Image 1 (tube, rainbow, N blue to C red):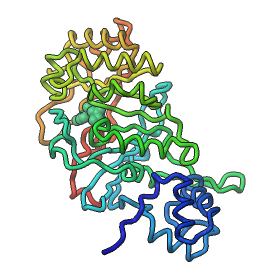
Image 2 (tube, helix red, strand yellow; image 1 turned 120 degrees about the vertical axis):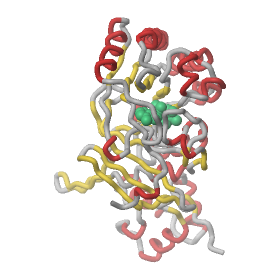
Image 3 (cartoon, rainbow, N blue to C red; image 1 turned 30 degrees about the vertical axis):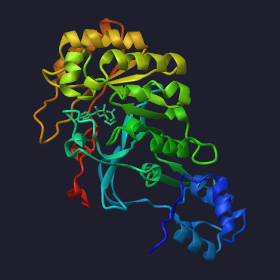
Length: 361
Ligand code: SAH
């Protein structure tokens, strides 16, 4: 039976060095390998510079550097790219590079949107990912792997540079990140840790549909990332109709947890609000939403609903979206009215359905 390969990206430098020494290689190679992967962003050991071929061979056999294999990719334009990954058990997951306003300063930045589960158990009625139900959690390395194709190699002042194409990461792909919390946190540590990709914690946003019991514990965990909450309804009545999670964690509990998070972590929360025609786009909802945002000192992201083919929900029309935004404005709430992105390639939020047929095209 083939020996299971060791997932590479979650290994610390010390653990890698120990494994190398146990297997008869020099300890200093660990640092060379880390430099190859995390600084030079080369994810195939056979391409590392100054590594003897015997070591390269061993590394490829012993460690898993590619837990997800790219089987397809699509570009809608220069600003939106999507990759389809095949996981080792044959499941598929998608990841999108898009342009989105940064949680930091609202400026448009290249943003990587990653998935954390195959399918989703939360069952939001408007969401494509919910349609197949929950299949499984992604491992930490499968989450990390989604970022690996997005490396830009350039030569600057005669020096070779390898940088990620994105400046922000949003955990807003398929799945509910706070339900796959342990793997999520190990994956984000790979991005954030100084000995790995050293990607700033404030450039990473985790989005949740409102798993309040997990949210309540984030402050004591020292959760260093930004938080977005998919609100989509400003009263229990409206939210409860479209998000089943609201019956388990009603708004009072969710907002209590959110308030505790923003107070103790001192970080502004983003409230995601998709505008669905005649469902959550009434002026009364706008007024309630403004109240919530002001109480939490949160920023609202108003997102046009992206039509999901098998579902009957419609996007609120442009006039209604503008009128809704005007109410937020008059109430003194902070918001961004987003225009849709990537819907041409089914890559917009919520459209990350498992479509095998999407393969190379
Ligand atoms: N489970 C997490 C992250 C995944 S969904 C969460 O709920 O936050 C990422 C965002 O896309 C959420 O705000 C989700 O509600 C939204 N979304 C889902 N379906 C959508 C659709 N069809 N159009 C626009 N946004 C959608």
